[in-house]
Length: 228
Figure 1 (cartoon, rainbow, N blue to C red):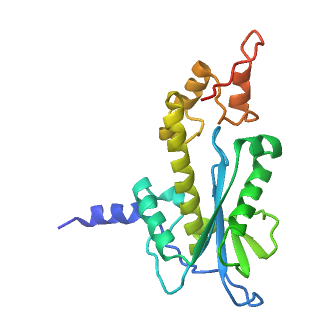
Figure 2: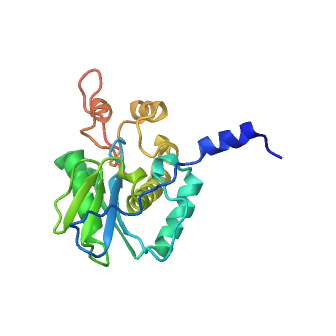
Figure 3: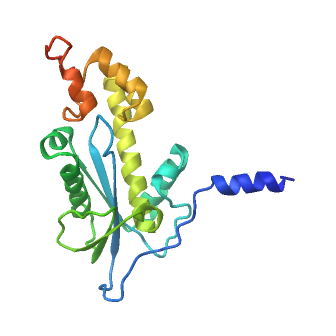
């Protein structure tokens, strides 16, 4: 029989449950509401991915939480459940070229807009994680910390995170020297070392400082970009 101490430790380790099913104001229209979140604003490589999810209130999905507090296995299982039980999901992305051209903020807003536009059903309101909103043709509201408060935003965070992680796994097969499978493009010491040794590839964000620094050698010569 487990001790009280071990039970307490397990309770602390579990993701905190989401208490808000949907955030609806008194003056909101009645109808479908979508949650929106993104993954991949901070990495040095790969696209930024956003997801929009409209949940089905009649098909409960247990375990929804901010994707960052879930393990990869938990995220994968919840990804499948969301895909099976949600009314619809939309995924949008902004490419590395768009990130370098627009900057990461505007590229993220573009990915979010594409995710909402990709929904099979049109919501009456969109709830977006954070404090800024993309340009949409429907009522929208920004919710700081929404991925830990609103179930549909949590679902969107999981869809976006798993989708992007799988993209980086594919990039790893093309460019194994960078270790994308392990760090998913984030600026880990291993990734920075690979950049110093191999230089950037076509999937690196050239305007991000650690990558931009590798386009020039100490003598000022341009570092070649690896293409495959």
